Image (tube, rainbow, N blue to C red; front, top):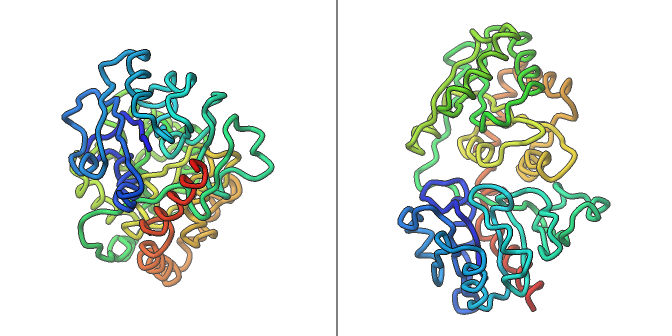
Length: 352
């Protein structure tokens, strides 16, 4: 099995999902080749490299030479985790570089390629009557489409900051490109309707992106209720910021994925909205697999109302947070062994 990615730098979001399947497979039965298009081959996570049979660098090769190098491996299946994102090599797949080709995890949509045989999903993301909308055959994992490996430090339950603050703090650490006008309209409405509430945004260090969001918040009259944090280089600092957040607000229609897993790992509930395709249903799948269907809004009005309702009863809210913290690790979101068993069962079936 080959895995093609350009996002293998230690600490990159992709590595936390790849580690799940790379830490839990039978090396006597499966050989995994990591095919990298990373700019700097030396920046690839040593941990990830040590979990696979062999590392192949194609970053300096044109498509023809990369094609020939991968073809020499005689792969039963290659899995692309980039699609049209990052330093992708999607063009390699149109001429078939392995017996079977699949898209998974890093790009949540159809590639539109005739020779991309499969897209790996789950029942919450692509409905049975929507399979004709994908050029790939849809493969369904039984619970969730990907699982996070978690972090190498002890989890400690943290009391909701509202207890010490006497006000609710919302948070969104998503890519600012996902924060559109409709999202800001909802967030502004929430901040106006919930007295003294705050919103922490951990945005890009890109001033242009920050200015856009500040301008929209100012226009809505809620800029004074928004706290901006720059990106942290250290993962621990990033995760510790969740200790200041009572409720995470998901973006829509392009949901957060890594940010939602991280918030839930820290015991913070994520309010998301129901979507209309793979991309826009990631939050649904995450919350459904956590048993938190009540945190899935049906539309923008419901999104605002659910945020308000969550803040009405402090005792119930504290119980909700406790439930999320204690159930998350046992859920499909972080159950690495169960996910890997399901993943390799699926891969084995299509490569027979």
